[in-house]
Image 1 (cartoon, rainbow, N blue to C red):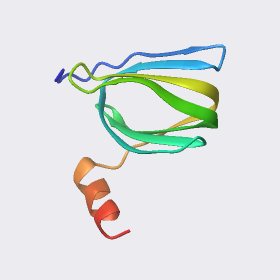
Image 2: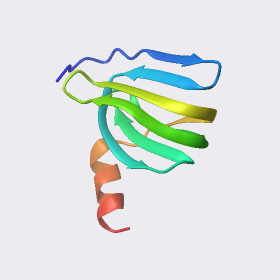
Image 3: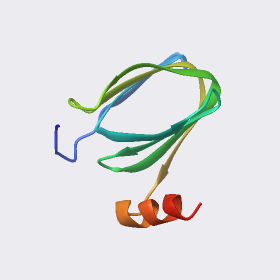
Length: 87
């Protein structure tokens, strides 16, 4: 797995999102994909979202659909794990 703090995010016409620096996909539906990246947690919101390609070995993710919002959460990994544990 790639272990650096660099991240590249490319959004093409709000229909395809290519992202590097992905360490874990926490949850995904057609309306929201929540993931952990090397720069914090990221929520991808939209319509008809689909994970087209996921390669955690190389920290890469490609999402297709209509992206309406990208939202970073600055909480730490340990804190997020505890929240998911007691959900």
